[in-house]
Amino acid sequence: MAVIQYIVDLGASVMLPIIIFIIGLLLKQGVGKSLRSGLTIGIGFVGIGLVVDLLNKNLGPAAQAMADNFNLGLSVVDLGWPGTSPMAWASAMGLIAIPIAIAVNIVMLLLRMTKVVNVDIWNIWHMAFTGAIVYVATDNFTFGIIGIIVHAIIAYKLGDMFGQVTDNYFGLEGIAIPHGTSAYMGVIASPIDDLIEKIPGINKIKIDGEKIEQKLGVFGEPTIIGAILGFVIGLLAKYPVGQALQLAVQMASVMVLMPMVVKLIMQGLLPISDAAKQMLDKKFSGGNYKIGLDPALLLGDSQVISASLLFVPLTVLIAAIVPGNQVLPFGDLATIGFFVAMAVAIHKGNLFRTLISGSIIMFITIWIANQMISLQTALGQSVNLVDVGERVSSLDQSGSPITYLLAKGFSLEMGIGFFIIFLIYAFCFGYTFMKYKKKTIYSDENNN
Amino acid sequence: MKKKIIVACGGAVATSTVAAEKIRELLKKENIDAEIIQCRMNELESKKDGADLIVTTARVTKDFGVPVVHGVAFISGVNVQKTEQQILDILK
Image (cartoon, rainbow over all chains, first blue to last red; front, side, top):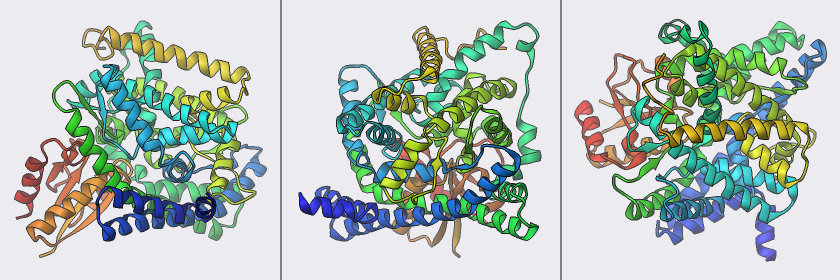
């Protein structure tokens, strides 16, 4: 036990390579390949540490100064999913989440509770994050594991529920998208779509986003988003222009460097991912099943791209009006489309409706992320990604109703906000579930 | 001549890494010299110059003036050979 504790104390950048190396050997990958995979994941972890530091050390104080100058609360930087997923992988729930999520999947498949065969190992980080946050909140390992299991069950069910949408709108037949913000926030769009349908006049409004992408596409590029945001926040922090320009280039760098280092973590996970895929393929293949894949597959649709463009400024604006909010959206802005991709499809590409449901989705997400700052900061510090005295948050996955309800529910920290979110989310989920059962989630009859 | 291939997905982290790795193996097997660049979907427009091929894991409708192959097979494991052939046809 002393040896294990010693390795754990060395931090994720040493612990993860050792574990991945051992798993690689067990999967008969050979010494060289296993060693390389292990080191790659360690390098990714060191890399994300550097980038998170670059972000926190520079944008953090600027955001604080801006908040002080204008009485705005936005002083806690959103690390986004690229900064948050490494925390999940490095946590006590990280790698054990993989066999747990696969086991939950297999049990559900055998009991015919789902048709989704999830081969997407990367996105298990969402479930691991929920488990890790629950563990931080309750200090109870078992509750953390239950958190992973509950999140996994919900995720696979979401894959089933949105099957009609991914088949028909995105043309992804045989594929399910159970993961991430797209799926779990998609349930909110469904009742909103039906509500808009009932309002005379409003139900006729239709906006096609194709032109927006042609005209404004350049502003959707992560480097440009980073630079503009850095520069504007620098000015609002009352920095001299030169310093604001430095911040602009630093934030553009963060946007470019983040995926470069996080992808190394994915590369290190590839042997596990391949082995899991092979095992599941052997047991569950054929027309009765849907292959569960990453929501990245949804981001090519031109209406999703247009919505992503509009939601970059909109999300910052919403963050400014959410009561008491301290979270400054940043890391997730480059891929804000993840939040609204399923909504776009539920609204059949009508951008007007996506703007409405998406605004509500972002409002809820930011409100929750704000409640989760101390928990995510504690998690970040426990894996040495966040320094003492710094505070962090993320829209994805800290802003998730599932993670929030489980963490606060298990730690019995239930205020009015908890029950409001619970009621809204349970209603939307139930509503969408009923539509899925009646096969009307994506029907052509009430088509505009 | 060295070919330039861009592999894109939503966040340039997960699915494009898997696809890029499979393409790297394919090219090694076929002895094709190529540089593989990974990026996000919303960076394609600015990175496409000089590329011989774009592989995206998401389905795209936009015309980039560069051949585009839908690389979902590398992620799902279904119809991989067909996609590999498409890629080889463009590069050879």
